[in-house]
Image (cartoon, rainbow, N blue to C red; front, side):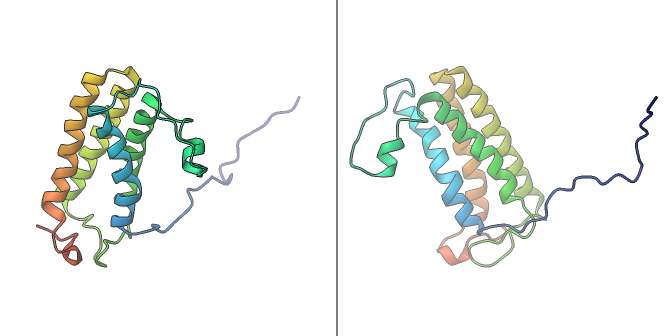
Amino acid sequence: MLIVVGCAHAPRAQAPESEPVGNLAQVMRGIFFPNSNIIFDVQSRDPDAPPEETDDGTVTSTFSSIYTGWPMVENAAIAIAGATQLIRMPGRMCQNGREVPLGDAEFMQFAKEMEEVAIAAAAVAATKDRDAMIEATNNLAGGCENCHSNYRRYPEENRCQLP
């Protein structure tokens, strides 16, 4: 008879340590901006409508009909929810070279609220209820405005300042 006993000193898998890639503006422009626009488009375009076909020979047009409709809206919301973790990553810098204000409770609350709004939007997109999704776009816009009105200052070099 073979008896296997667990070893208290067995190696454990550890999460890889990593540094943030890109600054806050790049994460916003690369993830938040395009994906929020996909969600906002529900206000003017029904995701159930057939995709517009183009054939200009570009990779974008070649693959434009693969991920469309409601799954695209749901995936956009999931991308935003996941990206809120990226903006809260220690070491993330603002475009102006300042650190993202992770020590500011209000900033962290706004980021958490954005994550919650995006998760809720993904759930609504899964139901394919356009009216409910239009309402969710209002919540998403409010989440964007919370941070932008408090932390995004103009001119551009003064962005990412504490209020």
